[in-house]
Image (cartoon, helix red, strand yellow):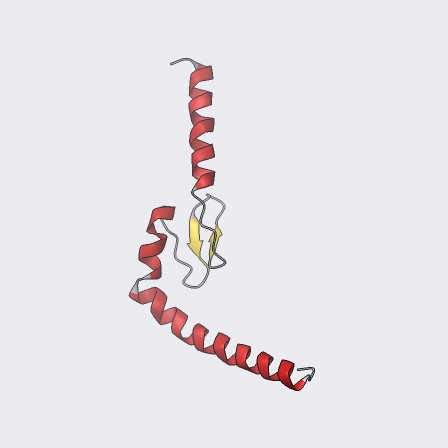
Length: 87
C-alpha cells in the first residue's frame, strides 16, 4: 500500500470516528479524544461503552444526589417563575 492510499484510509477512519461521538451533556472528550463521563470522571475506552456506563452502579451512585439537587433547583426556579419573583 503506497503512502497516498494509507493517508486516504486514515482520513476515512477519522471521519468515521467523528460520526460516532456521543452527543450528551454528560460526556466530554479529553486531549486524547477519549470520551469522559463528566459526572464520574471515568474515561471510557470507546463510545460503545457509554450505555453500559450509564447503567452502572457507580454512575447511579454519583447521579442520585445530583438528580435530587437538580430536581430541587428546578422546583425552586418554577416556583419563582409562578410567583414572578427574582430568585
